[in-house]
Amino acid sequence: FKGFVWQKELGFAIEPHTAIVPHFDFILRDERINCVVVAIEGVNSAKNVVFEAIRKKKHVVTSNPMLVAYHMAEIQQLLNDNPGVKFCYEASVCGGIPIVSSLQSDYLGDKIFKLTAFLDGSANVVLTKMNDGGVSLCEAMQWAMRSGVVGENRNNFCDGSDVLAQLSILSKIAFGAPISSETVSCGGISKVTRKDFEFARRFEATVKFLGVVQLNRDEAAISVYIAPAIVSDESCFGKCAKNMNVVAVESRNVGRNVYKGGAAEKCSAVANSIVSDVLRVAKGATNPPFLFHVDWDFDADFEGAFCVRVTAKAGGEEVSGRLRGVCEAHEVAVDSFSEVEHSGEVSFALVTGTCKRSKVDGLCDAIGKEEWSVGRPVYMAMFG
Image (cartoon, rainbow, N blue to C red; front, top):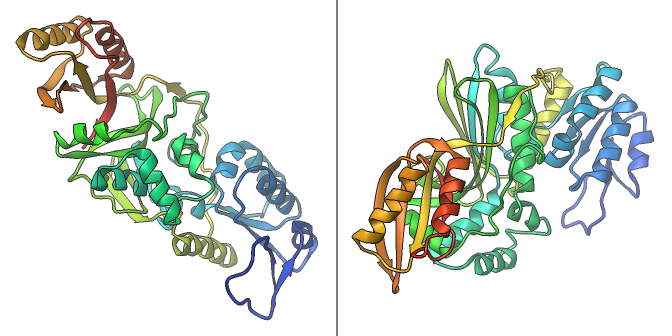
């Protein structure tokens, strides 16, 4: 017997033994149902159903990343209070990529030190349209909405909240600690412009919306980056096709593994992950949902290489020399430096050596105060 709560007009035929019910309680009260699939967007309704299902000793499979990320500790406590109940959430991260089950089982004897992920297929479609079509973010968004690629949850990738939720789940499995908006600065794609893509092309690169969580050099803290970034055209992220997700896992024993596949916006990919979880429950082949817990310190000052775009009132050796002087004064090493004039506007492109994000923020603040600078420079992290 299957029970569904469906609030939209059905565009397909249902099997005779499937019942459409008007409220979740019909499913939760039915003792014949021992596994509940929760594919509801948002948090409140999904939370109520999941929590009550666990209390009634029903296994739960969900595709809701916000629910898992925001209520991880409460879910774990409920599972502790109801031993034998299984909770699976493969479909909540990366659509059809089996990244959750892989992290839960394939790195038990290893130590992960970095996760780099492209987690939002809708954002990828929009950014790809900007890159290939030379259009603005507004134009790309309008096109994506007309095409049906972007739906009602478009704000989730504009502000980065969906990526934060998914990365938090991956961080919990890999490092034992989830990420919260209180411990990390999260930026979406709302400020990406055509100039950013023109800037990236100088480096044979493009702009993608990445989430990164990594151990610091001394392995005493975790740092996080969730924002648009410049990535090489030849990298696994630069080659990421429309509506795809990519996760790169770097570990001590294995090195770098790259997972790539259908994004959450592709219904068949999500459905496959949900069905796989249901079968794991049926076969008794589930993994513990949250393997371990570590009270990591979170370092908000991400370390890496950054691309800085400086717009100047004039070019030439004098301005170039003064710009280099500001970099030296702020102890920011410059790996490459170039000057470009386009449509009457002079801009300089700097690629820093590995440094703290706060150093780049301080550098940009100082450059923005120079009389030859046109506003505060724009920067993004750079990944190969």
